[in-house]
Length: 557
Image (tube, rainbow, N blue to C red; front, side, top):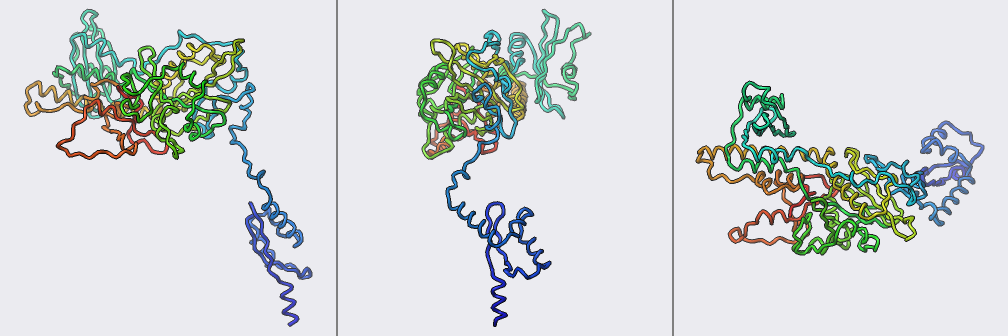
């Protein structure tokens, strides 16, 4: 009995818990200090230890372990406010925050992939009293998206010319236009392919006789392998060809406007702002005029002008013959209980360029707004002017995805504007050029290639079929105009709008808004006109879903 009792006293189960990185340990300890340590005990210590760093802790005496245990328990039961404090993300702790004594307008994305203009090192001497360089309004040139898009309309439509079609085994559909300019003794040729259109002018003195269409095509592109072209005899062919050539040309633009208050870092906070300060209203008046959407007849940019589903008013302007509609987040519908504010993001998320107005010293993170389409942000912050009148100045910065080429006009050094009219000219020019430059990014260039390929195929089919009808093929006399080319002939509305036409993807506005659609019989249902189809609201451009061939940065009136 005494031996058993002694064994019970010698070996007792004690629980030793550690928290945090050590996890928890449950082990048997021996109180008989005279008992020699065996190999099995060493192995047990090693197995019980989750890391080599904890060996000294586990090998301490029982009293030390109990003391540390109670200290840990007391610490856990006490106030943990200090432990729960989290540090700002790495970009916000960087030394960039102290440049010029103020926070920068934009901070780079933690994952990279964006460029910022001006670079952070140029912000050292930024202040309202700095001398301004580079403010030259005459250099605010608006970029042309397709410089050769109007060549056919300018040089061919007013002259007698011919057009031809063919299908190349490797290049696909080809549409060739040839014009003889006798007064200048030269030939002007345009070859349209899926990738691009090639334009050339050849002097007639280079040829003994006028070359054939195949020879002219091979002079522009040596990859052409067709042996013959078919002549286009359709009388309205120039209209269809003009619409195809100018499908990338659009006089209309739409941009998002975000209102960022002090202390707002997240997308949810920025999109949830409803109140507009007087400073923000003044800035909006610089961009354009506030118009009532009900019954508005100008370019609407996808906003509802009939039923008020996208708010009651918006900011609109006309600039050098171009119509611009601004999707102001605070003027779009606000949905209670929706932290993502999808009603607002479905418009701003479909824009390619957005303008961010900052009220305070909180920087804008390049990737804070998740969207497949948004590729560029122009950030504006109101600062105090050095003028005695107590006026205000505006500081500007730009960020864009790394595959977006740089675009003008160049930011002044320092990037500060005190003249409101000069700021307006600069911002509107910068926004337009930003969108045109964004089209060269990888994502949009792929969409554009697909759009052009589909439209060219439709154009080739239309010209070939109509020409056969003109030649007396009665089996095709009742053929209706194809949707792709018909849509193009109605006028250009930007490449993504033409992309929608080409791929025949239609948005379902009532389903998006959660309004049940009326079910009517097929006999009594009134067919929708093309304008009613084009007036349907945009599809979602949210960053949480993949692009499914939908887009809408340009919407026609």
